[in-house]
Amino acid sequence: MKVLLTGATGFVGSRLSRVLSKSGHTVLEVSRRPGAAYDWSDASLARGVRESDAIVHLAGENLFAKRWSAKQKQLLWSSRYDSTRKLAELAAARKSTAFVSTSAVGYYGASDDTPLHEGSPRGAGFLAELCADWEAATQAAAEAGVRTCTVRTGVVLGHGGGALAKMLPIFKMGVGGRLGDGKQWVSWIHVDDLVALYVRLLEERKCNGLYNGTAPEPVTMNDFARAIGRAWHRPAVFPTPAPMLRLALGEVADILLTGQRVLPRRALEAGFVFGHPTLAGALGELARPARERQSDPSAR
Image (cartoon, rainbow, N blue to C red; front, side, top):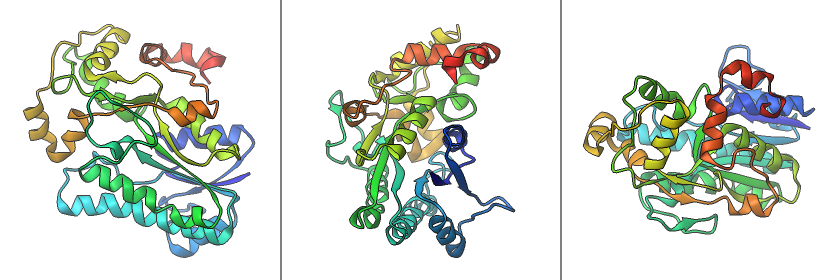
């Protein structure tokens, strides 16, 4: 299958590109890099969709790139809604085999201990509204009969990016700990499982609609911080108070200080098997020396 992939150079996209290629698919990358075969111009994007069989759309402005000013919020919205709508319309015209897009568990807003699944209602706040619009932008493809899947992604754990890239240096210095009061839920997923889920949704013709891209065992921030400390043999007793985080990050800090207890109900119902279902196992694998992980066939 020829797969048009956006966000192919990112933390998740680069891994997905390699896995798809190893699985026998041809990956057509959309990039702003000079010399890229396909870029974000209308003509190039339309050509890419015509020349591909399916689309996986991961691109979007980093939520943590800057403080959320009115201008930055507009950029976050347009980088997701506009690009998704454009690709959905092109997929509809092309009658693509599949259109797989992404969203975030922020759709559910700040929540208590209530378990959430794909049918749970939308929450309140900017991120929840952003995710709702983002997901709605796929409508043209779905209405045209293109098999359309959207993954609501949680906190992605892996080397070279995601949450660990920001948290590990602090823990390795011995001053890591919980964020805020530690009671908020963290719905996480190992990057290898997230990539495997994207591949499953792309290849499995029965898959359609919304899927939570989270591991089956979410944890509280207290447990999350302690698990990182145990995996890297570092203390986890230095909390970052909520006022300090809000002073440093502004409104975006609310993503870290609130959470959701999200369960991957539809992925499990579809028979998806998580390689790293528990946080201790996922972090234990990531904490292993690189030479051990590279020599272990099960880690590839």
